[in-house]
Image (cartoon, rainbow, N blue to C red; front, side, top):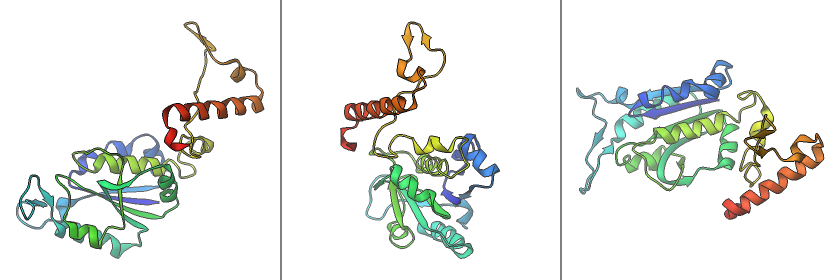
Length: 223
């Protein structure tokens, strides 16, 4: 899988995209993450990529020209499954969407910044608009990293234990069960006996009960 991320502030993406699971996936050639500096596609003396909006109002808007040039250059080089724009008013990102994207071959993620992007970009280039929650960030870089991480960790081989990703919260509509490790007792707090007994059938039953209880308590909307 290849993910191209277009950003007005690419330095925000360098460290998170080169550590942990994302680093491992790239080293194993399972994923390729390429960051593009939007200012490289601005050809005026000052590399201007944002201007005030027509009609007045607060904030600055990313210009269409650099975005069109960058996206069209990428589209001329390979076929992309989706051109994603991360924006607060997009469709809510969830595990189901991450699963779907993990099966794709090439994705572009455009990071908004300032007050947003020119509407013509959204109408012509963008195939999917995504939000990671009902709040506003300074830019789309953090959202792009969330999407990239959630998607790439699902690619077989990205994480050491392939079953781990399949049993994550939300994979089947329920939250995950509590987890324990050694020691069996810590400061008077004991690990549930069922987890120590070695009866896999009983352990599975206990985990399912715990998952339903947690989901009922914390996220009734998922049931």
